[in-house]
Each structure stands twice: as C-alpha cells, then as structure tokens.
Length: 267
Image 1 (tube, rainbow, N blue to C red):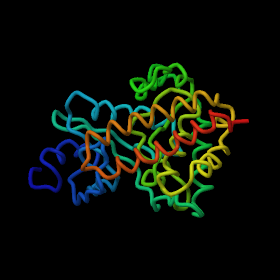
Image 2: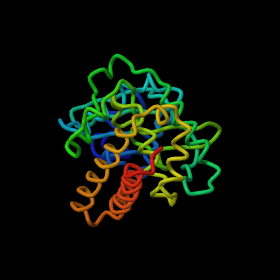
Image 3: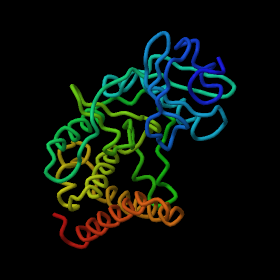
C-alpha cells in the first residue's frame, strides 16, 4: 500500500475503513489537524481529519472531537469511523456540501448564523463533557469564575466553520468545553466586529441568543478584556500572521465599547 495516495503511513491507517485509497485531495488545513482531505477509497468517500499519533494537544483535540460528535448531530456532520495506527489517528466524516458563511454587514447569512448559534446553545451538556472546563482565558483574567458554567460550548465560531447549503452546519468541533453560556455569542460578536460591524451592531445580533440576554454584564466585560489580552499576546508572538492582528484589533474595539458602557452608558 505504500504507493497509494496521501502522506506516508496514512493509507495503512485508513485501510480497514476505506479499503485501498483512490484519491486524497487535501483541503485547507486547520490549526488542529495535520491533514484535512476529501478521501475516496474502495468503500466510499469521506472528509478526513488526521493528526500524527503523538501525545499532546492535536491528538487530544481529535479524540475529543470524536467523543463529542454523537452529541452534536445533526448540527455537525457525522463521524462515520475512526482510525488509529502508530503513526496516525483520524476521523472519517460524512461529506456535506455548502459554502462558507458571509458575516459582513448586510449579509443575508447573518440570521442563519445566529439561528445556528441558538441551536448550539440549546444542546444539553453531555456527561462526558463534565470535566471539560473552559480554561483558555483563565490566564488573561483575574475573574475566571465568571467564565464557568454548565453549557456545552463550541467556541470555534468563524465564517469558514459555518457551512450553508441545503441546511446549516457547524463544522470542526476541535475543542468543545463546558463553560458560561454567553461565551459562544461573545465569540460571534468578535467575529462580527472583525467582519466590519460596529461593536453595537455585533452585540445587537448576539442579543437574539437567550444566553446573551441572561448573562451578567460584568461577566461579558471580563471576557471581552481577557479576549483582548489573549489575542494581543498571540499577535505579538506571531507578527507574520495577519489574521491574528485583525482579531486583536477586533477584540480591542469591542473591549473599548464594553468599557464605555461600564463607565455610564449601560442601563
């Protein structure tokens, strides 16, 4: 099988599920995967995410995505098989068709994206996620308790992870966690600001989510400040990544807006 398509050792890892590989067409790779590809084999076709089978974050993330998948259907495409070898660990997803969402001001996709977020917010917290506490922002705030909660969080909200076709999908559940319910709408706010919305406009869209309307404003303020600190740190570390600079600017604009509200404009 060494002459089949794909990186070294991949065909052997996938063979029990796919049969001999016919084509491996890489797609744009995400940060959490070493390979994302449309894979055709003797037994069918799938979207495959694979990482090198080494201890650490990428492997842990893929394992977690496989575990959560049955709990997030039909919002997320179904994992149809999992594969593991000494070299690779992989998930085989059903192939879904759609285009990436447009989150720019005036886009017809905005109500669709908000409705998807409301559906995600309505998912129950599965028992397997009980210990998946959201801690990514803890080092950037002195109020981490405000980010705790019992909601299943997606957190990876951005245009390329929202596919719109015959139905709307949230793909790439690379790191689901348990935390405060307002965090997913807050992540959407940052994406909307990055797409050209004012902070006020972005929060207007988030306000359609019950979890946003029910949130403690002080908790949202704490998240906005922590997110600003996090992206500033990441952007400083990687000045060659323009998207990080853009996200740092968006988080900073939103945090300034929250600070102005806190200084007296909040009802």
